[in-house]
Image 1 (cartoon, one colour):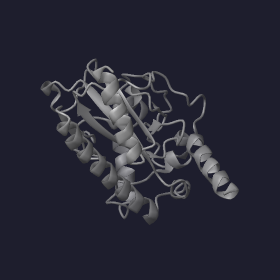
Image 2 (cartoon, helix red, strand yellow):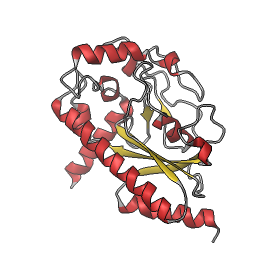
Image 3 (cartoon, rainbow, N blue to C red):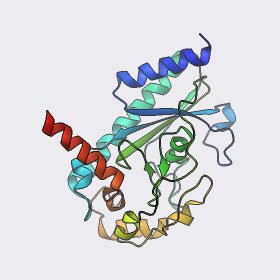
Length: 243
């Protein structure tokens, strides 16, 4: 078995053993905006998604709740634990790995982190970016939190990079945004974030209207109304009913 196949199988087992439902590997060498330590020879990104509780997500269509704020914090902590352990275990295999923190804002002026998790996720084939500037997956819609580890471990890219949106003509998120921060433009690889989202308007609304929820870091209305997320809720509700 080739090293790439061996380590892809190792990674798949690693993710399954931790109940991570979605993961993929992405080649990031073609990106113009590279992550920290890109000069260390880390050509790949391992991307994964952890689903949020659908009932909590469905409950924030009019605004965030304390249940959502707590779930947001809890899932981010889990992602950081997974990222730290994965980076350590990759190191034990003899490779380099750097974990990217979940939802960490390192540039408060431009309202961004070191590297967008969703960029790695789209390149790994996990999902696309919706009109709300968040990753949308087929399985869970945008009701996920993302994790990323950069590495030089030879892992095969599991999914084909997504290069288009599958939101169609839907504007549910755009119409629901109380800050009017969404332009309604469709995503494609390389489009500037500001072409889709006014981050200042979004951040200001959260700070002034929802400061009680993680110091104004939470809103979630645009995600809550997404039809892909609501399909996830319907699917889970049906499974619970049948059981």
